[in-house]
Length: 302
Image (cartoon, rainbow, N blue to C red; front, side, top):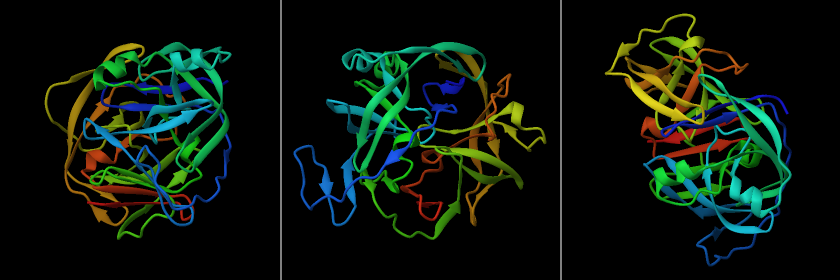
């Protein structure tokens, strides 16, 4: 397996590598509600209750193999998906060694293949995943986390996240006046955003609490204003610094989003990722976001 690129900090959850998976279709479900609170609608629509942690991390129930009622973080910037090492032990998975490229260095990790993963209408078989100790994340959030699930599981099923009603809906995405076309290199989604009239390409990341730009990708300097003292962040390779910045104005699609705050990471390497940073959708204070894989559009409501 090729080297992965991983950012794993307390306010950002992001991973990417070149592994490929195939999402299998799911059958329509009848109208009913199960004991967990899952709401089944007509056709292929299904809603799941979610929990929000730190007002941006989406947590939902799912299953892996014969393990049910597991706790997943939904992270559109995670690729491949990641499981806690105790899940790998419970499933007696065969693990292989690998290397992960971090924002500031490289680190050794483990890889495994899951028999299948299911979240709502999304079910994927033979899923390559990272195997990590997620205990530090659990300690931060105060609850058990079994996996971080990305678009290698969710990427063929349109879905939306409503942060106000705390529902994850699989099925057709409701029309919204605010939309932007996205590009996907299966299964990563990037969009072009203009920061102070400069185009940048950002990875859409529901697991990020704030806008994060990679300094090494900003070859043409954007007018950024320092917004305070440097912050320290932690990933599996150790600590590193983030410089807070104030961006005078931001535009996505046809919508002006006004001034934005974010961070710049002084990463030292380019692991082949073709984007300039991470776009936190929740950091834009959105009420709802939809991923329409038929029209290749992201929609949102404030």
